[in-house]
Image (tube, rainbow, N blue to C red; front, side, top):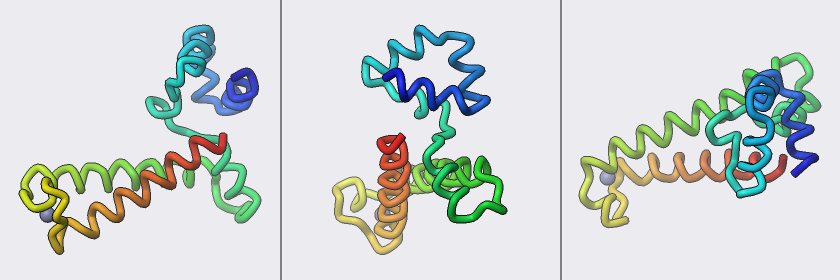
Length: 116
Ligand SMILES: [Zn+2]
């Protein structure tokens, strides 16, 4: 817990969040609540990408995965709301790739959270 909070402090947005309520944030982490879910800017991908591509701004990349994840989730949910086969997990030709993309981005995003 302490290590996660310390690393999270490196991010300015997280710093602001934790500065406002560091104790609450610490308790939230201990309870298993992922602060990054409500305030996404994981450090690990920024670091990894920075090593791979030092010329790109890491923060943009970190936000990009989350943005793509959120868009895919919204697109999939919109389709799901209007598609009976998909609601029954009988993914239709239109819904299957949407679900696949959403699942892939969700896995990537969650994996990044776990690696912090
Ligand atoms: Zn469908």
